[in-house]
Image (cartoon, rainbow, N blue to C red; front, side, top):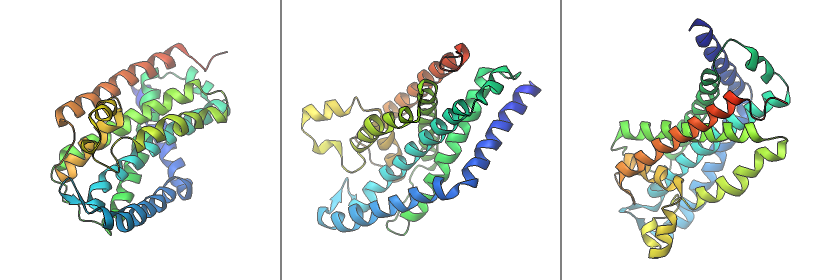
Amino acid sequence: MSANWTAFTTIVRREVVRILRIWGQTLVPPAITMTLYFVIFGSLIGSRIGEMGGYRYMEFIVPGLVMMSVITNAYANVVSSFFGSKFGRYVEELMVAPASSAVVLAGYVTGGVLRGLAVGAIVTAVALFFADLPIKHPLLTLLVLVLTAIVFALAGFINAIYARKFDDVTIVPTFILTPLTYLGGVFYSVSLLPDFWQKVSMANPILYMVNAFRYGILGVSDVSVSLALGMIALFAVVLGVIAWQLLERGVGLRS
């Protein structure tokens, strides 16, 4: 128990130090990017769109943009950190250390969650200069943030396990994660889509995360909140089991 706790806290401490040491790469760019989104989509385009879901367009897109920043940063932190440990060959020290695979996984995922939440807090602070956020359900809002960060930290871990070169780290975010995020209801309500595309959108996991988070802040959602929470929890459990099994078997780690 003591060895596992020491291993967990060591991994988390290293991840936090890594995030803070290169804060110019981990914390600042998302804030700048989201500020541009707020100005271009919220202020300029939003003034022409008017209201959506009973709120100003700026207020409507803020939850989605915060969620987008949490998703991308939780994912990026774990995939880059764990792949870096493979590339630097010090992952072998983890494999022989007296710590269980679940503890190693939990340490990296916690690091990803902390970065996701930190960036989410920064983006939310920036958003307050552009829109009023009532946060109608604070506990639900926090729960959705944490669960979503866990889901994508786990997804980043799985990507890092299978990655053999640096290009493999960028393929999933570029060709899968980014399209799913933009099509996940960040900038629009899926109720505006034709019936066929509404049904197609329901296959997008990010749709549930964005809408559950939007409900927590604004009280409006395109999907059932209980269904959304159930889906997010299911994704977390499934990806957690997969990541743990891959790590336990040493997939991508042992030659």
